Image (tube, rainbow, N blue to C red):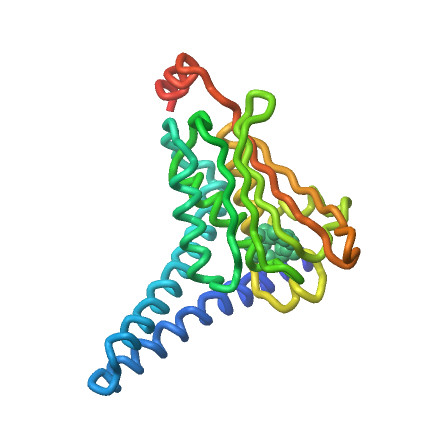
Length: 249
Ligand SMILES: Nc1ncnc2c1ncn2[C@@H]1O[C@H](COP(=O)(O)OP(=O)(O)O)[C@@H](O)[C@H]1O
Ligand SMILES: [Mg+2]
């Protein structure tokens, strides 16, 4: 391996180990507390501890899911089962999952009524939305609010995920979608991450004929902060086209 790849690989192992260890330590800690102090704990506390164990397990599952995705994407053995999907419920489910991880974050979801279905693999769609909505909470700065807008533009269904945070330079608009890419700023240094989320997200979106882009616009009141929007779009497909795609998968 050349030095650069080796360095990236070592950074990756150390980040992944950290990301695995944090939730595992918390799961073990709360499980031990419950075992040792079962009789002293009231029902409310037991429920609270179990909730944390559940949330931390979800965090681990997402991380492992992302790591497996990279391997699958590389070996091109990814199986997609694409079907008609109305995005409203899946997006709401992802919001409530991320909300349990980031209880201080406010989520606003504006979904156009009578939004047409999109033609995607439901599991992959969930992974795409989880990565984007989780990032919006994780990288919020100054204001702790995520806005999600879903609508139609030019024969596409679009989903926009917006938060306030530290600016992403235009030169990084493409770069952040590559493997291991993280932006070097004080916030990113403070929060852990592998730099794989957006790489996987872009790959999954494109494999299902969609596209993804980012835009960062400085705020008027405070130019230190920017409004960051990730836009995912999927073409609205005709019934005949869907039937053809179903036959070929
Ligand atoms: N919603 C967002 N707001 C601000 N910065 C973001 C946002 N999403 C992603 N980024 C930046 O893009 C980088 C890559 O994101 P990602 O691929 O999900 O990796 P990770 O979250 O593991 O760092 C992040 O490290 C962060 O610097
Ligand atoms: Mg991420």
